[in-house]
Length: 525
Image (cartoon, rainbow, N blue to C red; front, side):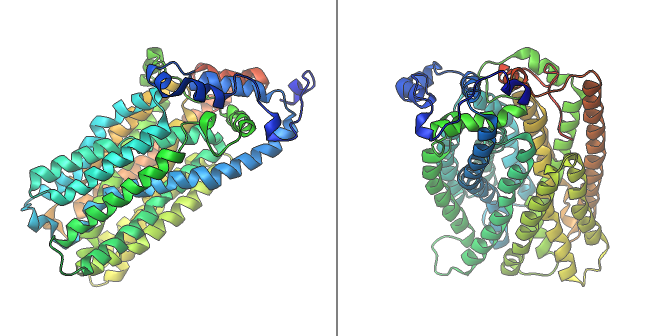
């Protein structure tokens, strides 16, 4: 950028109202064309709009842009990020309702027997598995923020429907559709994070919104504890949990529908000039914003890229781990000698473990060369906890419970692996395909994992614990292989002199080139 600055005349904006008064202003385009144009697909592609805004950024002094970029980043961190965090917390709370309600007689009231509960636990992931890839295609074509806002109303209603079930079949069906609807959230937030934050910032911001699973665990445990004390109800206590959480989801849907943007181009919290700065900031990612056209050669490239396959294998490993931890935390702690109310309340510290773990390892991942290492390091607390559950004497129930809390640190390697497609995969069709297949294999792992917990092996479940340890080992091996491949590719491109940050190279990121096509692209390790 510095070399280009000498050959261009730049004008520093004095106030934001002096900027972007032309008829091509993005806000005017959106207002003029309206919703009908959106439905007909006539609005400019986000990448085209991004390229326009990036071109406008070249009118301004780079030092001024750098200073204003700090203000824009803070604005995003304090307005947009909390919206994402709240949504993810609600989404995870919806999923966790099964775990909390299980402590209050759910299986007896719905006449479940054998491994019926394991299948109900898997139902959500069956829905997620089947909907994962279609959602990534929909997200590529339609406005992200509006889609999430609408889905909150729908899945909040479906969450409440769980209070109306009466047997295994109806419970399985409702959980299936809940999973299919909520499958939109994770890929949508990975895309949004990549559109608003730089590649070096994304893993920490993603860790923040996933850390809200910890807040959700605390809130859900307290909610379940309170519901367990409710007396004189005309419905069982476990149904009350679903009704409360469903209502919370619908109310939050109003907030998201009003304020969550689709990208920098229509973020209400940013002025016209700040939108230019926001696009200039993420131009260094060299991945653009979003391109609606499906380019099948990028899908073929993804299917033959060994780096992509390693991302998918890591996704399967964290899926196996997540399926066991999320669905059996309550049963595991209850098996250590606690009653239903105690088991609900004693899960709350596990949420704190997740929050702290996500933030610590998320911060480490922002350091140069530490993204892959952070995935490996964040896997170690969970492994130590599993070994403790296998080896500590059953009489030491609080020590065993502490080992169960350590499983919540799993949120950190999960989100760091999730962030890889957003950071290291360029080309919108390629990234959509990678994300879609990533969540397919992730859900497959979630489905398989609960079936490792054999009822006759309670309370330690040695088969399941050993299986989860194996998944951790596999995750670490795949992470090491991935680090090696991207490091070698970066070195190969550096040796050829394919590096630099001139204006043309930054603009190239808005041309929907893949990470393989764009030789100026560098993978974060």
